[in-house]
Length: 142
Image (cartoon, rainbow, N blue to C red; front, side, top):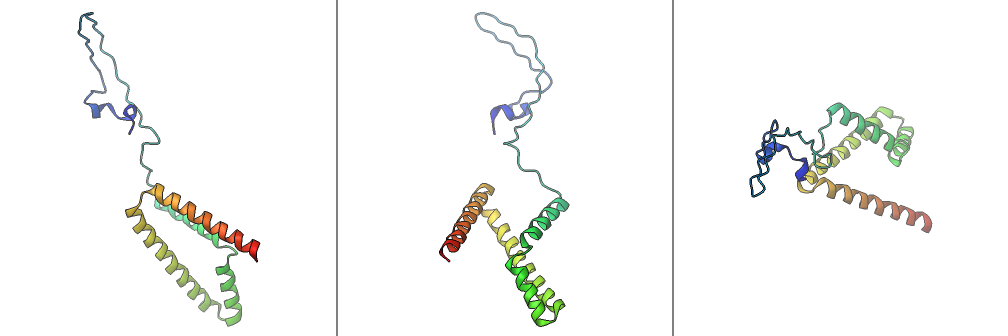
């Protein structure tokens, strides 16, 4: 926390008036001044808690867009066409996606209790970079 971003009460100073008297050999006498409350800095404030609706909407849109046209959707499409039982394939694929999502949420919660958000963010970035490099390498080799 920066010193200039802390509320005045932390330092034991009243926010209404500050009386400053400087007494030394020159005998300065300063008049009372009104202290202005200091707004905390943006970088120092903890992240605001988002509403459940916003979290749900963001998660839904992100996962929905990420899953369109991926191999899971194509596999489900082929299984449904092969088996002629679309509802059974739907229930099986939905159960599989729910299970993998549950594992991701549980693992994410566990990691969040042990690592700082910055460390998790940097680790995820490095892992995505490594996966991207592996995919590019595979494309150039194949």
